[in-house]
Image (tube, rainbow, N blue to C red; front, side):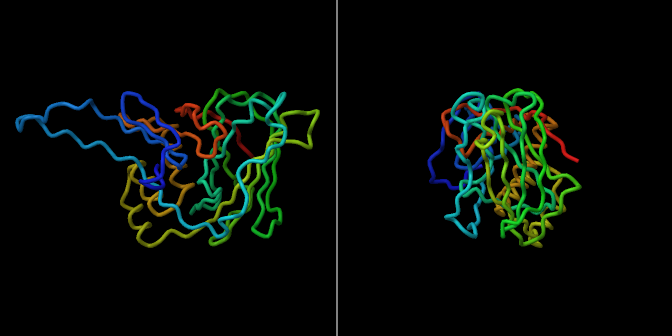
Length: 263
């Protein structure tokens, strides 16, 4: 998804189709055949391939508020494989959702090792804790992982903004220096127009486009992520790549890997 047609791409990837990652975290690879002569009228018309999704970013409530990544011990030792983990969020580190228990997505280019302790904390906009869980990761291959708020977590309220933080305790000898990822998420009520459009749409790509054009980042991302996981949209190939990345030249990934569930 491209946030702006004039903003430069973070990087491009040449494959059998034209692909690009803009300042958004979604990469939609729209595959089309090589350029050929225009078909004669006797040939059946070819279906026009879908266009890349364009995310229209709303204005964050506090554009200057810090977010994203805390340095911690991620650049050395046992934490080095986690130094490149990136939350898939807009550049403002603030995104919107219509869901009461949304899903967050992360790009883990080196995968996760087994048994690493991770703490996930959700706070309200007054910085009061609402939910906290600690778990240990399974071993995963490189790819994109997701964390979803469980039914036991309090639901997000409409018009409220929340702060989420993920602490990765990758070095047991330095528990006070975890790799830290953070951001903010706001639950909004979908407009009447968007509700009507979603009610008549059964195509995941179209639904993701509707969310993105309305500035609802997390729902667009989750719609595409779940569709990629189900592998039910050939010949469209959806892939996710990092926005907030310390190494923007790293190649995008096209694998959704299972990670973590909570009680």
